[in-house]
Length: 333
Image (spheres, one colour):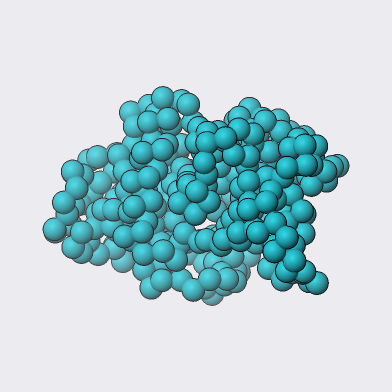
């Protein structure tokens, strides 16, 4: 089969090439072979391309990038107990290998694509929505009536988190984003307040919008740069869920009393390092919380741009420049 390769195993976006001599994946017990139609891009792909991925990868991740995809079932492996059959339109999550014509994945990690949804849209859903649902429900334990602050609100995860929080009963959702246009996008998805962090301090906005009470649940993808303002913005017994650390991971001169004074919970979570049993449970939670809402249009994703996979380098450059507002998708030719 063909797959996206990286010259010398790592490098910048121009190191990508289409490798036409890659062995087909093996379909073992409990696994499904999918002929990929489209795949979504994520920032972890940049780190892995540069050989700078910060967390230990499971052996199943392999060398081929990509963790979310859509396509057609090509083969059902032995001992599968789900109702997938050859020709079914599916989308799902993988530990790696989605930048390719074919992928072998656990039956626990795929779902049928609703009739109302394209391959391109479906390919951009799993990583973002699974991450948002994990952070808000499984880890953050959102309760109806609570307030939520979401950083990087215009990112794929941020957009999903806005909608998951609102439909989960949040009384107020505040987000941060880097441009006025991105703030407008967040409001269109249901955010009650959007803060352009380049022109306004989000901690001041939180103080005003909550009358000093603070935020019950903070979903943070930024890390270092927001740590002190996050603890200042959190309500008593509030939760800070750390999903990523895009600005860095080292916190200088941190006073633990910032946590003790408010009895704060600080929770960190990753998705890719979880085993397939956990991810299967998360898939089931996604089906419960989001799938019908996506099918009916009550939830959505914003697709920023669709590229042919021959232009994977340009797609990565757009992601690295942070000019996209929403998902970048590649179509497998």
